[in-house]
Amino acid sequence: MNDTVTISRLGHQGDGIGDINGKAVFVPFSLPGEVVTLAGGNARKDIKALEVVSPERVQPFCKHFGICGGCQLQHMEQMAYLKWKTSLLVEAFAREGIDISPEPIRTYQRTNRRRAVMNAIRGTSGFVLGFSERGGSETIDIRACPILVPAVNDAIGDIHILLAAIAPKKGDTRINLLECDNGLDLAFSFGGQVSDKAIREMISSPAANRFIRLSVNNEIVLESQKPILKIGIAGVYPPPEAFVQASKEAEQDMGELVANHLAKCKKVADLFSGFGTFALRLAERSQVFAAESSEPALLALNRAWRETGGKLKALTHEKRDLFRRPMNVKDLKYFDGAVFDPPRAGAEAQARELAKSPVKKIAAVSCSPQTLARDVKILLDGGFKIVSVTPLDQFAHTPHLEAVVLLER
Figure (cartoon, rainbow, N blue to C red):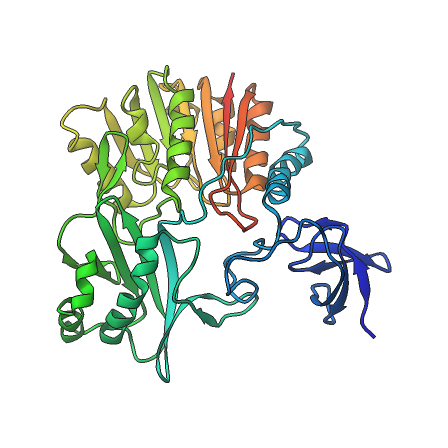
């Protein structure tokens, strides 16, 4: 016998939640107010039938929705979706005892993803190239994705051609494709060695002409021009497969929020700096120290700074694992401003040192509301106050939420 349940709310992963005999059940692709008949024998169930349909339900715009694991919320009306997404931030902070009133969530046009990380595997009739399936390990073959910028979508056919030359006979190939300001950067990575013959065959293919740089297992094998990402007045030459914000417009918004908040600071520490998303903008007004664990990222940052020809203020850097060795109070005594943008795990140890430091203004950036709220709570306990909280829907149609919190003593 199949259960029927009324969906009361959305969970933080975007699943509808109902209750059966006092126990929560999680129903992907359902919405609050819907009555659904369920299939499945565990706490996470599938919809067998929609008995009552929410007025907030809309038709998904992608034919792969529900099969591809990339998007979870294309079926939800935009205003309701944005309200729910903002609530993720409010609720995460409330769990830490912090009451916030966020700025309106910033949104971007549908086709805004300039970066795609895809997977490919050889099949009986060519390659399966795309994203992981929902709830599984198989790869869904995708010839076009409606959230990718046109140039990235248009390159998928050429990637298929290059894969035939370079991909191993067995195992997966990871594809990292990025639209830079002057063209497309493509990187392949996989286990094992690749022959010189395979590389020559790949780079001699007409399909290779679509890309300004080709890399294999982090080694550049073809570069007609250096890929450039413009950051303020600087131009960064990103290392192959470097972390890059998925949306150029979202990155610009985050950069402006941080730069404006720290504009009057004389010396700023950029912690988890990457290749300079914030540091290069901040150096237009302030002396900047950048700390980052990736040496290739720091080399790219330093090169971009030098190539401005003295137009930026002093920008020094250090290769440093801030999880194991955060900048301490003694290190921070020279700075009146700081920004941190850590991985999803957050910056707990670093936040504790910042809370004890003489730093006066901080910009906290994160893609995890939970760890962001935890880190901000540490700063509030150390004498800071929140100036503003701005959510950014960089990863639309997913539960992932970017946010910038500006604080001062």
